[in-house]
Image (cartoon, rainbow, N blue to C red; front, side):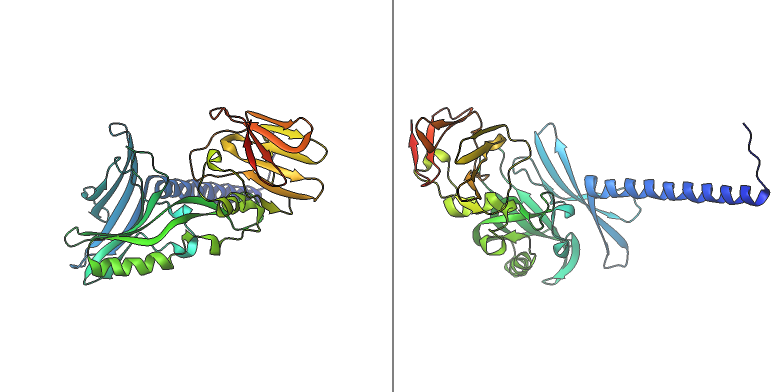
Length: 333
């Protein structure tokens, strides 16, 4: 079927199609640009001492040969194809720069070029942990790279990444760095590291018990670790439960058991959560993310004749343990 329209209508429709195509083109270009910036590299432009427009490019890449990550920093003139490698950390230290998307917005002041202690320096974040040994924590570092002579100064704090709840929705979390050690380790020029220390502490990317709401059920792992410390379940004789008044059970637990007094659910990576029907409250039996975990969803049951006694064992840690859900006392079967 053929439809006819007057010239004005046709012109209007043609204009709309043109605008639509232009918007689609701009959207695709924006997405492509964003992907390049966020996924491939981080760029920082500045003006050299001779007035030339320059650019520092930080790139994370995976090395098949080294079986790990490489953090490379290149210096180049804006628009030029050639670049010079000025900084490299290899896979032995598993070094990589932190994505700006993972840091709180008000703290995203790096990478940037600043004047510090008489020299132009590139400031950027770096997280590192050795790959040849198994370590609990990594180091979050603020690095200053001199653009004059390549001198490197670093201020770092020991800790680990955590997703801390900042809103009510489960997906509305803010990636921060959970401090394990409070002291800041410094390497390099003392004047520079002193300046880096202040910037690191003001960055608001470090978190500890005083900066996190332990009453928010989305922070149940943090709350459990604050009560029990960095321990394996096999090291505990009594667990201290973290209690909450609102539900926080996972949507799809891998295993659950229930009796007249409790409902207990478990899901991969070891988290075991419970609901106390008599007191109408939720609590955490086991939820540490600080150490390599067993999966205690392998077997959950109740001790015969003892409705408060939860019997549990893991896929790898096959030892059977009984946890008293009233007192927290742990006994071996």
